Length: 268
Image (tube, rainbow, N blue to C red):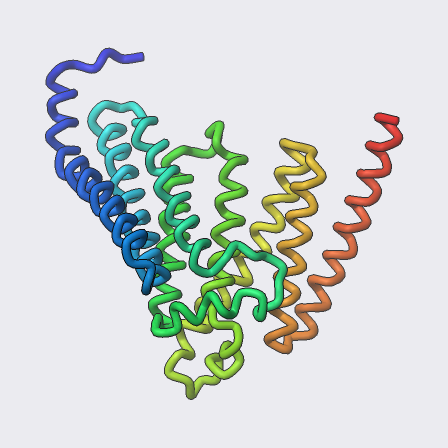
């Protein structure tokens, strides 16, 4: 490893100072917001959405810190990346506290939660979800392809896909994808993103099952993501796509059953 000179360290501190101050301010603001929610729970859902957005900003500042470290010191700032990972998880958790982390569930099971954020428009919901996805991608890229955290990101991506689905007002989705609706564009973009994320999460969980963990629970979670995807297609009335997903579901369920039986024999 190359030795870092005092001049390089000073240069790094100077360039990173702005973001260190922004991070400190972000941490302070989070504490104040949580204290406010505890004192006055009214409108806590909207306050938690604001916190979710703030945590994405905080994550970005940590990622920038790492970028400065790589540029100036030629090394990754593992501390900054670890804090970025914690912050983006916090963002997802704050959103889960508002819209739930229910995956393959009918809309009626979490509809009441969405009433708390009824005033939040379709475009605002889509922008928050899009920002979360971009931030997660930036963090994964900062860690690199062969990071030890590679497989842990599967869970983060899955939870992200779930809140992306749950924040969408499914009850009014069909009317909102009418081109005459003022919510047409953000709803269509949001829907496309959800469909992509659910399929991607399913594939990633199966990939982790086969290449890393060999845990049945990973394969089962992948199947649950496919089932959630099929549910969306049925709501949209796209029976052809729903049938395609159903066929994939059947293949996966058969594969899981075969693997489980084989493992049972081997360890019997």
